[in-house]
Amino acid sequence: MRRLMAQAPTGDDVYGEDPSVNALEAYAAELLNKEAAIFCPTGTQSNLLGLLSHCGRGDEYIVGSAAHTYLYEGGGAAVLGSIQPQTVALANDATMDLTELENAIKPKDVHYARTKLICLENTHGGRSLPPGYTAAVRDIANNYNLRMHLDGARLFNAAVDTKCSAAQLAADFDSVSICLSKGLGAPVGSLLVSSKTLIDEARHWRKMLGGGMRQSGILAAAGHYALTENVKRLADDHQRAEQLATRLSQVAGVTLPLTKAYTNMLYVKVDRDMRARLESNAQAANIVLPQGESMRLVTHLNIDDKAIDAIVELFQQCAE
Image (cartoon, rainbow, N blue to C red; front, side, top):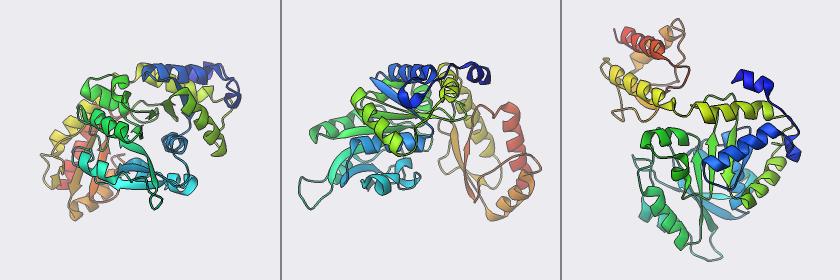
């Protein structure tokens, strides 16, 4: 990946003159069976571009109450776009109840914000959306003339998990954000993929948000490599997460609230005393753990079998 970055032909992406960026955007659009794509520095920006391009001031988007675009992206849609989020509770399988979702759609009345968009996430908490769910949401969206956006930061994890293509998982959506820097292993970058018309609008918003880039082909080359070479290997991350869940579930003082790992994520809970021992011993073992007694552990391409052994050994020592 770094060799390709060093060799990448570059140009001025603000003027559409960077061949490496253009190649990445064309490849991503083809991969998801959409018309066009735009390269962004972060997934937060690519999601925001989608929301801003679909909605105007005073409009509303419906989103899960624990979704990333609502909780973890700084309130950008509301602050920068004057777009109101309308949340719906997420079930354990990462879905919104279809009746609750439909009830959240505002009637055409001057007293209400105008519902314009439904935003889903795949995966959420490591869980892939169940088969047929997005099609059912699409039917609701069509009935109310709404658009759909997918936060697909880990879409390729879902594709490997469900054995569906990324294009199949993206088919019901008007726009999709995909991340290159998580399990796919690029150092930076995300893409918003959609129609040519919406991507043209997104380019305008990206410039206003300060996201115009010059010779960004150096970064795009890494993203292109990630999409072509690092998708299939996501299955290794899923397998290691499952292995880690199985082994940690046998350690005294460790519980798994969700009972198992989903794709490359597992959630563990430890008691306060064990948490203190973990904090004391983790640094010596060269292991970085999240804060708190409830932790999300995520496997990726830098976590190999030896790392799994080391993590399990740390928990075992702290249990003793």
